[in-house]
Image 1 (spheres, protein in one colour):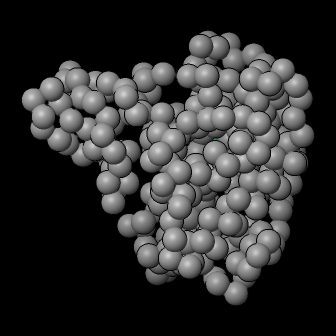
Image 2 (image 1 turned 180 degrees about the vertical axis):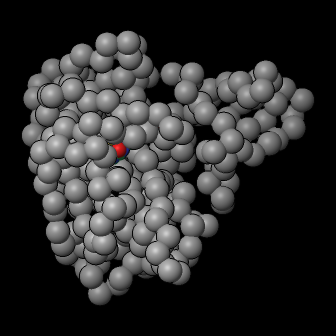
Length: 247
Ligand code: BTN
């Protein structure tokens, strides 16, 4: 069960404190180290050890990109995957507001023109019975050169041939996160529908352990459901498989 301090999640007041840093190892690590309150947001201009999922690194050059983490709380980690989906739907909606149509690649990468534009890293910190859930989001905003990742990564500027204001994107994103949290508190999870109906994997073949599967859906545990050529279905969690090669 996710736990949001209801009285503090009223319309537009959910984010109470934004810490702006010039340089840090990782905004996720920064929030993990301290004892911050629910809703604290950290942004940074330069990350020296940006973290990605599955032990990967997150690289951002000195162009203006959005790297932020927000601290949420949960009474258990069972539903933490839902926070990742909530974040992905929030980014999806934000990109859309800035004229960019994206797809959500399970579990929570955002894809535009078959290239990654946003990565999300959800981590937990156990503190007595209460978990802190740290949601780290990296949006490629004004980055133009991706080096070896040129074929796999893109940015808002690359897609639209214009500069974007990171602060405007940040505030729109926080508002969308706030919106989905409020909705969650009222018992709705439209963020799940957004992730499912805009899945990048719809119609794609997926190779797992040498077998070819077709994507079917996402189940109630946040696992991917796939079907093989013999009609047998299997489910996998984000920790079991990586879909890194599917673009
Ligand atoms: C991924 O695609 O594997 C997840 C990337 C997450 C990157 C963001 S940038 C801000 C926050 N701080 C980190 O160290 N990582 C996340």
